[in-house]
Image (tube, helix red, strand yellow):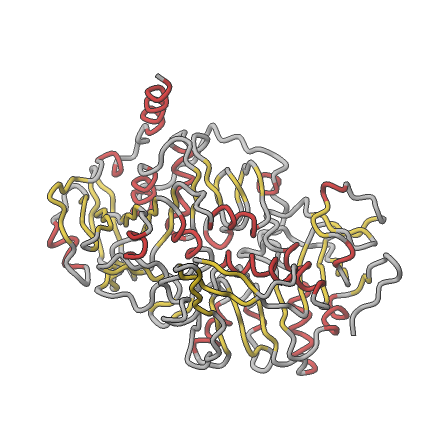
Length: 533
C-alpha cells in the first residue's frame, strides 16, 4: 500500500517504516554513485534489516544506472542477499562487488546496459514511451547478435532488440518502469519538494522519480533536513514534491563516505589552484601526460575512471586546465575530477547537468576527445572493460562515450598484476613485469568495437607507459616507443600478438619522463596566437 499524503503534506517516516512499502517482486531503482555520492544509505540499510529479520521483500529486481559503493562492502553490496534479489539491470557493477559475485556464481539474473541509455530510459518510462532506439551499443556485447547485455548463463531473456529503419541498424531498449525509487537530496520541505545544495551531482534522480510516480510506484527520498513548506527557493528545487511519497530524515547524512561537506565539490566555493601538488612521476603520470598531448585548446572532453582520472590533475599542473573543458558523465562540467572511488565528483566545476542531459550531448557527438582506461585490447582495436578474468565490472558510461567521441584515447599499462616501474634519468625502467598481458590476441568480450570505430571515422589511440599505438585498418600499429626501450624485448614480447610497426616509429616525447613540467601551456598559447593571426 502506498504511503498516504495528507493533502499536500508528504509522509515523513523512519527508514525502517519506509521500506515496509516495498513489495516482493518489485523493481526497485536506486540513485547514487561511487564513494557515497547521492547514496540513500539509510534506506538501503533499512531494506537489508527488514529482509534479515522478516525474509521479505523477496525476488526484487534492482535497477541502477551508476555504480554505488566503495568497491568493497558499502553501497549496494549489503543488498547481495540470496532471496532478496532475483535480477539486476545495472550500468556499473564494480563499485558493489558482492552483487557482481552473485552474478558470477549464477545466483541471479544479470544485465549490463550502457549508463547513458539507462538514464535516458527513465525519461522514456516517465513519458509513457515503450523504450528508446539508440545506436549506442551496436557491435558490442550489448548487441543481441553478441550477448544482448547478459552477464551470465542464468540470464536468458532477450531484453534488447536489433531493429532496421531506413536501412540503418538501431538497438531498441525497453523502458523499465520502477515500482519503487529510492533517491536522495539535501533538504525537503513538508510538501516533499527537494533541493540538492550539498550534493555533488544530480545524476538521474529527477527522471527516476518521474518514471516511478507516473507508473504508479512509490518514491522514497532520503534527505538531511526538513523545512517549512514553500520556503525553498524555487530555482533550488530539483524534485517536485508531488513526485515524492515518503521522506526519510538522516540528520548526519554525509556528502560522501568522507563525511563532511566539501564546498569546493558542491560548487559553493572555488579552490585556489595557483599552487598545485604535482602527481608523483610514475607510469600513471607518464600516461596521463602523453594523453594530454592529444588535446587542443578549446576541446570539450570526457575523462573516465581509472588510470585516466589523473589527466585533469596533469592539465592543472601544466596550467592548461582552463584552456579546455573536461566533463564527467555524472553531470559535472569543468574543474578537476576526483579520483578512485569518488570518481563522479569534481572540484571547481563550472556547471552541472542532470545525467540524462549530459549523455544527450555525448550520444549526439558533442565531445571532441575522451580519455578512457582499458582493461584489455586486441589486435583489431577492440577493448574490453566490462568483464574480464571472470570478474564483472560493467560498462558505466564507457560505451556511450567511446562510440560517439571524435578522438578516443585509451590509457593503460602494457601489463598488469604486480607491474613495478621506475622513471629514472628520462627513461622508464621495468623493475618487475606484470603477470597479465593487457594487449591480447582477442578480447573475451567487446565493450568497444575497433573496426566499427574506423567506419564511423573516429581517431583511436592506445597509450601505455612504454609505447603508443594507433588504430588503423590493418589493426593496431606501434607508433611511438619510450626512450631506452627495445621494441622486441620490452614491448612485443609482452603482447599477445605482433602489431604493425610504423614506418615512422618515433620516440615518445622525452619531457614525459622528466620531473619538471612539460610547458604545454606555452605551446597552446602559441597555437592560439597563430589562429588569431
